[in-house]
Image 1 (cartoon, rainbow, N blue to C red):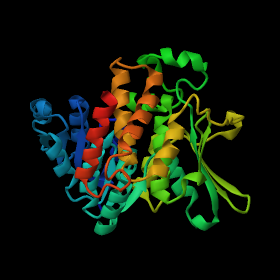
Image 2: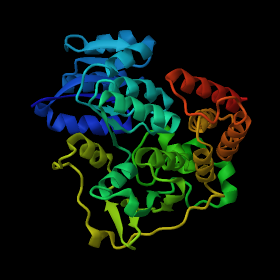
Image 3: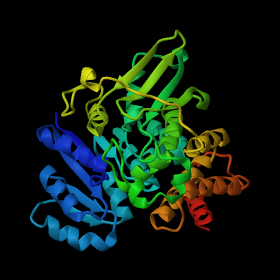
Length: 384
């Protein structure tokens, strides 16, 4: 039976990996919607290759370029936020949510309402509005599957287990571009230096978030939201080789680790084929060739974002939405050259402190409007 699928954020690094998997086995799928940003040439080529029903760019000003690129293909061209949400709401059995940032929340909710599977790579959705997302999925009878490599690893390692048997879980971090830099050098780090990852091929924003460990801080919060595991039972370990993605440790002293090459197609392919496993174009591990794996505890002087993640989970309510928006604004400011690399975490911390006294801060956002309210307040405060 042909499955109807959509990919939101098809032109980013995760989306490209998803498109690659679909292209290899296109007879099994009917591609409903592909969405992207400013890379119109890539989006149009993906839509042609996958014979998508509709292709949407998030930018209104690029509609003419997209229409021209799709002329004669049979694929509808559309643009803008509302068109993106409408495309996400088209009936589909499986939707990959790979839009970067808080912008992925509304399309994700629209996809969930169809009652299929939402393969979630957009960690910001759970950080900003975990309760809202889960409630929407439950109401529609939808399934949310993790696509971040660490959370997919936890999901797989937890199969057949109960949380009562779990002592704690560990997600690993490569450490990013600056894991071995002297602390005193970090303040002078450039955008170009922060945009180079030692292991993963990713977009600029997530690569910089990896260097600052804000990406891992978000994933700690995401693990709590996905699996209902208390913050004190979620650990982070720096693992430069990026081979072990997560470890589940049990009360009986045993641990189950998930190992795999640093290739996002495994996590995407697992979610695409779940509950089955099918062959994937991912390199098998050669442990003898690897020889050894190394680990170290994260230094929170180097990566204060990890401490902030624990404080966000302790605060609850709107803290996740504030944290994400402040992080996104601070990242914008670093990329634009307005602040230093080491200024980002203090900016986020100051925003959390400033907004903690606002009415409703301790209450989970119950609607998109409430998430947008905290998002706007946080960006304004961080930029100031």
